[in-house]
Image (cartoon, rainbow, N blue to C red; front, side):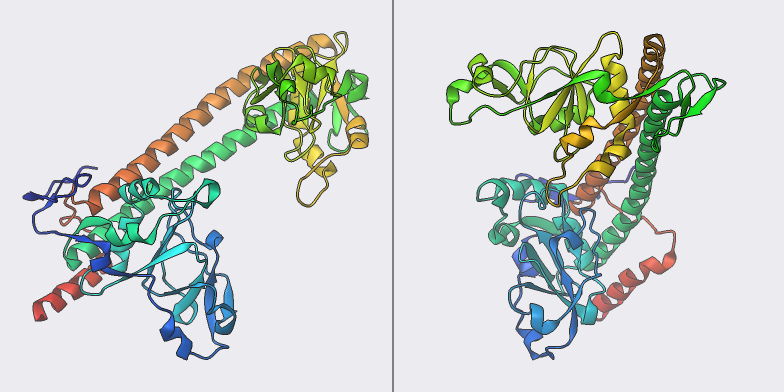
Length: 464
């Protein structure tokens, strides 16, 4: 979809903004909205009055607002940020700000609410700005990019100062145009969001298909006509009659890990890769692990219970996210949060054991315990059971699964790219509309009722 430009532009005087429509007014937000307005008006209300309560998790990155929390006014009037219907809020703390957590307050209980203090509140001045347009401004790419550059503090406590919002300068169209732009963006972003949702559903279905391919191949084999037998194991069900069902520890030697003393710098930054929970992302996304975030030295190995494991070991997380697995591409050691399986050459191939662990995901979840950090105990690890076909069939299963999974992964990557491009399009469309780079005045919503607010404002302007 393409839109015309405005017939006449002028220099905004703002470097990042460039030229803007000639009839738009360049102003700081402080002149079109009040920043963090006083809650004094709420103090005259009854203490038992029910109001909306808005923690950070209730504010979506897509502008959605979850209003399921309600509390008595007296419980929240002190210590929280006051909002009312029509206000615009945005998260000022990292990473919520960068991720676009912002919302237009609508449908609040009793028309008011109290939110986390990590939200900045903007109350539009009726003659200068509509809440719908102001929301699109603070949710736009330029606002977030420039705000990120102004953050202060360290680490996870970095925040956007209130002065940034006060002094943020952009061009403001007349109210009727603000309404038109907001209506246009509501319609177009909803359409894009629906397409993104379709891509996300496709990605989930493809991932489910990938998991099903793995699970079926390693538990049922590749021959649909092969005689089956009851495995006696709930998660396996029936398996080919000629397969064995054994404990994993009988097919691979179990090795545990350790962490060398961190107070001894000479134990660290050596040439031995050391697999830890810091490598979880790589373990979750790849069949093989070659590099690790941390390395240890031979001295670190010698002075700890860590073992130097050969290439081809199947490493396996037993804490936090259980069962993340990969095959070592070189000699490595592991932390105590992982174990390693050294496959017995005459019994099991590392890639087949890896696929078994992938298929075992739900079974592993059943064994986990712990409220804060999930873990699986060593007795349960030693009791894990696997289906074991002959080596010749393991090779066929590996080839088949890897081939099918490669095709599915390619389709997943294509769907993820499509979703990414749609989101880029969404962001670009918002930025173009609120900065006057496109003229949407000729756009008409499918439902003519959506034009009613603009007509009302036109009548109001005519009277004034």
